Length: 218
Ligand SMILES: NC(=O)c1ccc[n+]([C@@H]2O[C@H](COP(=O)([O-])OP(=O)(O)OC[C@H]3O[C@@H](n4cnc5c(N)ncnc54)[C@H](OP(=O)(O)O)[C@@H]3O)[C@@H](O)[C@H]2O)c1
Image (cartoon, rainbow, N blue to C red; front, side, top):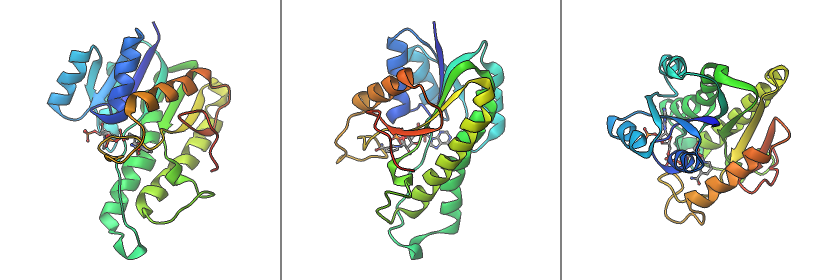
């Protein structure tokens, strides 16, 4: 059976990835940060690990605990932010958003990524809000973090070409989760089903696409 690791799986899109891959018979390794979330993931049928993307040692421990290789690694963890104007940026909050959203997935890639087999895939949850070419302004730290993530994923795609590992920057659409809010038009099952299709059918690496497979401007 194929295997996937989902980092940041306590709720929202991460948990839905876990649910759908388990339903398809995959071996699923999933991370969370709270005891209750770890228990809940195990109850679903996943192997659960405590990991925080701001703590590389916890990602290394998860990597060491996983037996065998991975077909797919999903760096899903992320945090939202607002800051409509420059004056509202708080330096400590900005640094946290950048650390979790931009550096976090790269720490996931350099720890758990070592387990991804030749020909496998690393997918990270980016956002159209990180597109510089399609910028609506505001939401400063979140936009900046996802733009920085996109550059990191582009570099990662080049670095992993010799290992034949595809790297995908995925926009899930605007989805009804704690982050997306109640007004979001998409539900997690539809978004995740679309992203799973995109991952399964991907032929190119270093691409930025949405849940329907539509290419997005960097
Ligand atoms: N929803 C949308 O409309 C939308 C649109 C574009 C992109 N995205 C991206 O999609 C991804 C998932 O979003 P979502 O909507 O499912 O958000 P969510 O419901 O707020 O869930 C966020 C997940 O990230 C985890 N997380 C946060 N900080 C973490 C850390 N330091 N270490 C490990 N895990 C951490 C959370 O775990 P805890 O429960 O432990 O906090 C939770 O599992 C994010 O990267 C987000 O930026 C979402």
